Image 1 (tube, rainbow, N blue to C red):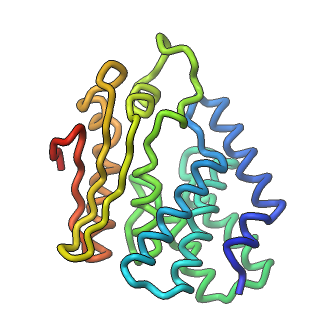
Image 2 (tube, rainbow, N blue to C red):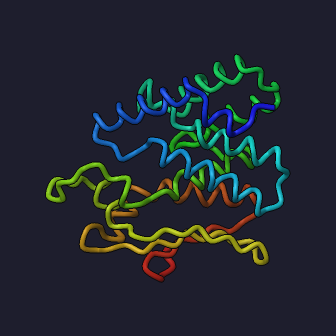
Length: 219
């Protein structure tokens, strides 16, 4: 079996992640490099592990999480589909089992809002982990006066916690934001569709999704 550790140390995959992030940086997007993909891989895998999924499924989830954004190398538009095709070529060449390969590619191809659907647990966990990675350190722009709405929202967040309660089957994203940089309305302007996708993904996992901002329930 191809392991998550092998994927993290795969020379070509590392180049694709670096170059994809460099492209997004040129376009003015927030950080999508190793910090982001590692956090997504860890969060997604941990979520399924806590829900009792087997070790093999957890490992595939981490692999999907680490590779989910390589399609940005091709273009930001439809990057989930581009990334799925790239992942298929790499993992097939490495000899991944066809069923495992199908699950990883399916999750990557369905992780983004607009076209993504939580069609299976791996895809659902990937969606939640990706969309919940909102943090100040992802902002590249150092000039506060020229922040766009994405910069303002990410920079405003100084605390993020994804809280799973297995007893009552709830998953809550808790954010603490500094409203001097971004408002709750700013957050919803760009994250409404993402949070709706998280809600659907949580339902796929048998959970109810909630969003708390500065201690107030907003979803």
